[in-house]
Length: 289
Image (cartoon, rainbow, N blue to C red; front, side):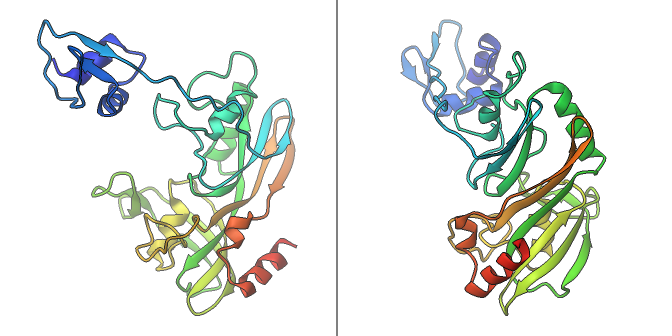
């Protein structure tokens, strides 16, 4: 039997893909010897032992909270923080791990507690979490019905021909790089409204309003127009080494439990502002004011 199949069968608390990662990291031994090949063929008399590292303690890490009540928590996520873990192994601090501490009793299990929607790791800004399952269902329905209004700010490398426009281009997974996406005729419909706030001969500062919620939608749409987001190491081939992605979730409007319509906003942080030329900063501050 292959080693990874054996591990997943006898230690089912971890998925096969997670065991593959643990094996490659040197946490599995066969007959006392570390084996990193997941394709290793076990014999009937081979003795397998595992040493799964303890999950790191993130109890001292916090995130800025903009609003909180018994049902929701609105967080100002810094760039570089994951929304939630990608697998069963919780080895990194994330919005989900922060939400876990604030969930209703009995609802803090799994690797995505409280997560309603997501922001990419390198995107900063507003994200809302649900503190109980009823609220999560209530909010997710609004996202699926497109009654949630989201606005972003982005610095792009390139010139957008129009000052305002609606991008209506379908997005599909890129078969050559399955972790990425592209504009393609067989993709799902995607719609983004944009407005240029500032421009020079090389860059634009834009307000973005995604009318649909496809993965990487803003990044893919802008890259397709020849104006990829600054610092985007996936979709911007000419991206310079920068401190962060030039994308910030500026505003979120939705209805809270009880029927109260709320708009949450947060200005871009210092590391986003540091990407902007001085006259772009003036335009940004005028927009926020």
